[in-house]
Length: 106
Image (cartoon, rainbow, N blue to C red; front, side, top):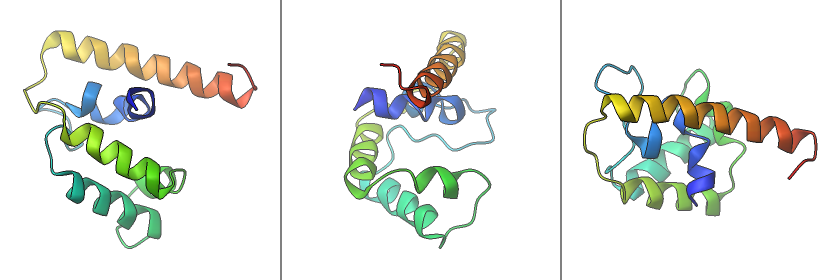
């Protein structure tokens, strides 16, 4: 589940803990039902957005529920400089993994 959630790190921070100065919402610690409903609204087009509607279409209902439960279980503690550095590393790792997957590499 953590690997699936890592795809969100580039925008929402490590474990869903975006920083206070980020324009994107923190996911960590929010209710799972709220997170799942929001993702489904993006997926159906009921909620507008720039990137999220397209990304949400890539997840099935089971994955949305897993992501929602994962982020709901995370501490909503504020991000630190170390967390910001980890966010950058996770974003790069997620991008590399996505690129490798498209090429059919494990």
